[in-house]
Image 1 (spheres, rainbow, N blue to C red):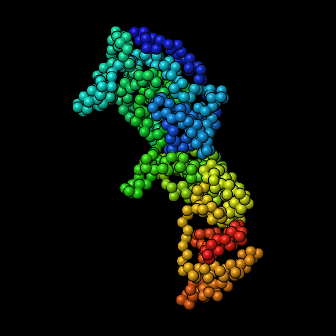
Image 2 (tube, rainbow, N blue to C red; image 1 turned 90 degrees about the vertical axis):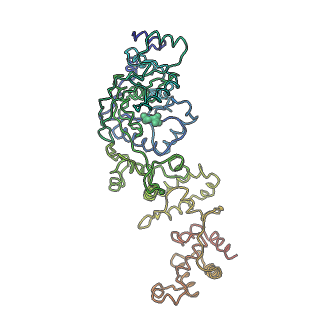
Image 3 (cartoon, rainbow, N blue to C red; image 1 turned 180 degrees about the vertical axis):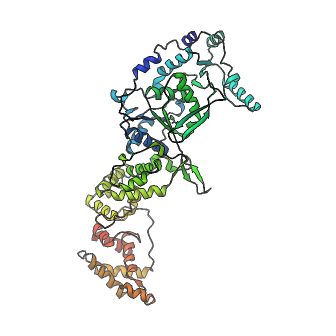
Length: 551
Ligand code: GLU
C-alpha cells in the first residue's frame, strides 16, 4: 500500500506538517519546576463544584512555581454547545478568584494567545496535519463501516462473549486495498479515520498517576476513532495534540478518564510526543441519608453541585477556596490553623496529597469554614462583599439594607463581635446573614418568628412596663436595672441566686422578661446584646415594634 498516496487522497489540502507546528509552538521557557496546566471544559453551559475543585488544583499546581494555567474549550461536540458558555466559565471562575494566564477569552492579547487558538473547532487544520502524517506512516486508515455494520459486529462479539470494539479481526476496514478505498470515496461514502493500533493484548502499560500512584493497565488494542465523519477529532486525538502543542506538563482531569489512559499512551507514542504527567481526580461524593453510604454528587439530585448555587446564596469566594483546599490537600487544614495569617496561596500545595478516593463534600464543614473565615475579616470587608452580592441578587431590598452605611456597619460589628474578647461566628453566607439581621429593616419578610413563651396578657403587661420606663439615654447597665425592676414588680426574680434557691416562688426570672422584649423587638429569642440592638435600630423603630404588639 502506498501510504503517501492514501494520505494525499484523504488530505489533499493539508500542507503544513507536524514539524511546522512543533516549531510554531516551541517549548515554553519557564522557571525550574514550573508546571503548565489547563482547564479543558466542554462548553455545555453547566459549571459545577467538581470543575472548581479541579480548576483550583490546576491553578495551584501551576502558580505555586511560576507556571502557566490556561483555558482550552473542547467544543468538538456541536450538539452540547451552549451560547455564552465560555463567558460563564471565565466569569464564574473569576468570581471564585481563579484566573487564567492565557487561553480562551484572551483573543485580543497576542501574548496570552500564543499557543492558540484555544477552541478545538478552530484547530482542525492542526489535527489534520497530524492525521495525515499518521496515514503516511501507515498508522491510521479510513473506516467506511456504517453504524449498522458496527452494531452487527458488536452483537456478534457479545454473542461470542469476546471483548467488544473495533480491533484485530473485527477491524474489517484495516486492510482495505487502495482500490477499495478509492471506490468507496468515489461512491461518496463517509468515513472516520481510525488509529491502526499497535497494542498487544498480552502487554501492560505502567505509569505513575500523580494522585493515584503506579497504574498498570492492559495496552490499548482498539483502532479507536481519531477523526469523526465530519473531520472533527475525538477527545482522545485532540487531547494528545493539544496538550502536546500547548506544552501542558500536568493533565489534571476527572477519574473517569483513567480507563482511557492506554489509548492516550499509545497516541502520544505514535505521534512521537512526550507524555505529560497525569493526575486523575477523585469524584466529589456526598453522604447519602437514604442509604447511609457515600454517593457521587449528582446534577439532578443535588443543587449544591452547581456553582450558581453558591453565588446565588452568596457564599464568600474566599471561604469556598479555603473549603476546597481543605478537600484537595489533606494537610491544608492543619497548615491554615497553624499559620492563620498567612496568605493561603503560600500553602505548599502538592498533588500527591490529593484525595485518592472520593472527596467527601460536607455542607456542615463548609458552613463551619465560612463561619470561621468570615469572623476573621474586617466589618468593612464583609460590608463590601454583602453590598456587591445584594445589588446583584436582591436589587429591590439592597437600597433599604444599605441606605445607612453606619447602621449596616454597626450591625456587622455587633454580629461579628468586633471589639469583643472573642469574635462571634454567626455569619455564614449572604442570604443567611440578611435573614439574620432582617429585623433591623422595615421590609416585609416571610421569616419564621419565635413565639412568646408567656401568655398574651402577660407579654403585653411586661412590654407596657418596659416602654413606660424606657429612656434612650440609659446606658447598658441602667437599662438592665430597669428590666430587673420590671421583673421584681411582676413576680419574676431579678436575683438569679434567689431564683435558683427557690424557683417555685417566682413566675420566672429576669431573663424571661428580657426574652419578651427581645422577641418583640427582633422576632428572635436568640440575638446578640439587646441594648446594642436597640441602639442600632433607634428608639422609634423599637417603639413601633413593641406598640404593634400592644395593639
Ligand atoms: N473536555 C473534557 C471534559 O470536560 C476534558 C477532560 C480533560 O481535562 O482532559 O471532561
